Length: 507
Ligand SMILES: Cc1cc2nc3c(=O)[nH]c(=O)nc-3n(C[C@H](O)[C@H](O)[C@H](O)COP(=O)(O)O)c2cc1C
Figure (tube, rainbow, N blue to C red):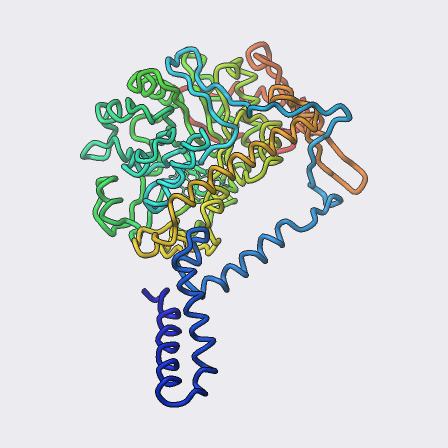
């Protein structure tokens, strides 16, 4: 209620001074006039639908909005093209016409019976609990309108995910929320029932995420409302800490067999996993397990260490796990080198917000991208950085119904749809200006980095790119030790060597 106090005070002042003007002296109109105008402005803020912050904080939200605009202006300022590390995509002197229809990516390997056509940009995993019911629904309706997918996040498949009719990627985390036995294990029957829902297009097993790799998801108690508690089967108001690792598998081989089991239980829908890459050896161990068992997931989502979270502020953010660039290149190369790339699609998440961001990630090895925080901005996020407190002024990361009221579902879903469409269109136009009509034409030579005051290097030069099946035929020296040490029956320790040898062209 405190958020409405300034408006209430102004309205009370306006009423008092207007009464004084009518009863005592006309001089009071000097005070009543501005107060009445402010009251009118506050009422307009409260009634409008376009700006979630103003709806949640009539009058005072204007101050925050001013700050937000300053931040946006700062960010869209000039890029320093001479700064070391600056990257640019390579335009062509023979650009092509952008295609009418944005390309989609078919997800579904040979063992999949219900492949899914994934958009180039989708809503990244954000759970009901981290997000308000309205935010979940608005993202879902946006996904339906724009024909892209929403990842449910690890908090389960809630009624809010199912109300909008949008396509869903159902994420299963270590807490198995939504398909959880009484003792916290995996409930196969409940999983199969829910996976059969027509809205569920794919299933994603979360191994880790960039904001907190090696730790289970955390939902602060302040956000565990009755609805969230019901969905997850946990007590109201208690902080929910998911276990750090899965109970149903402990080796790469068991992981791939579990993925195959999930796919069967899901009626042959595409199944994949999400991770923030730690060591290359572990990724190779999973590839070895796929080869040994003759089964592969349909997709892998790579999250960068730069990833976000709706939970407590995380000290480890950006300090544990590979940034998205190296994570993507590792997974892409490992799959190419193992001869598995044809059957496994790669999604990428980590600060994807613009068309060029999408194209950059496609060049680095992704087939499609997901965005979490950019979608929140499209919904009306004011970057108050209070997601973990449940006191979001824009109604997005709160479970307080009064605060959630700031977000208008219809407006929010339209903004999300328009944002996704404009961003994918921008990616398609950028590719066309590079002379590439669709993502298959992109190569590592299309992305260049400034490495010094007078040196520019393309990704083709900067990184080693394996040939299909090269690891099987005879790995290059820089991969041989990890490939030989990768064990399908054990996640291992990382190799004691530096990045230059691991990623560079020392082959
Ligand atoms: C509010 C919020 C909630 C999130 N919840 C989950 C989750 O439940 N499961 C998950 O795998 N990732 C979760 N993430 C991580 C995102 O899906 C994404 O991987 C990460 O934020 C990087 O994408 P971005 O830079 O576009 O935000 C969450 C992120 C945010 C901001």
